[in-house]
Image (tube, rainbow, N blue to C red; front, side, top):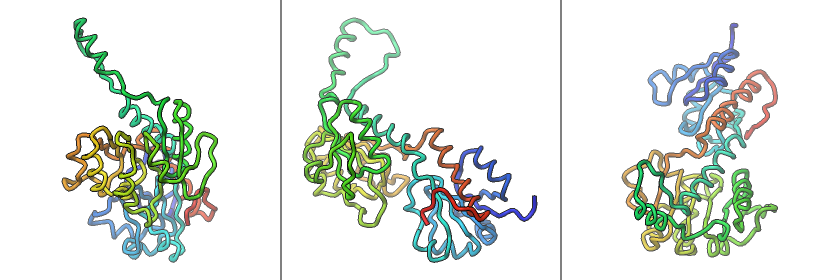
Length: 312
């Protein structure tokens, strides 16, 4: 096959979708920072990116023939949508591909925070057995607690259903006042004051930068569990560290950070009640494959068809 469109891929995707696209286009894998990147950008008609490639005016200036940007994932914080719109470039993505995976991690974090447990690897005597069982008694049971969800989008609504299924009272705060059969919309201040577990699911708009600040954490219960799987920059990490330092019964479970990778400057690294994971919320094979199938919409645009999931 000749005259196939050139697609520059800057981050890894799953093998089957990559092979599917490679049968239909010239798929060039080259990382940002490579000395040959500009050579391939000059020929590219499409860009295929994930989380850590910034698609802005500077990059697009080096790729004058690009017609479509495919984001294998959900968040579009790393893609300048207005710049793409101004240049007539379509942006396609996979908006619901990892919702289940992220929800599962939120539930796992909740269990990690509330249910102490160990796994036995060797026999133990009766006194140790009995003392260990006493030490592992959970102070709180989920069915007695309130889950507060900030942002009731695709993931937040799934978390509401999961938490309700575990017997939790569920409240949420969303700017759009979304109705949900599993949750009750409440003012933000009420959510922060009453929730035992707070799970954050807000988008990457500029106004959300460090929106969770000293005022936010000052309203939480002294033993609150704070979970963030949305975006690292929505949390003021210094404010969260101050809260955790003065409330040792509280804990934070964070999967996203600002910046990534985590640097030595992150104040939460020194907090024993802060638990940080390396951005793994979407790390299930099913989610990875579903996100990688953005290649179908990339190819649709290249062949003149309408994409199914377009942000621009």
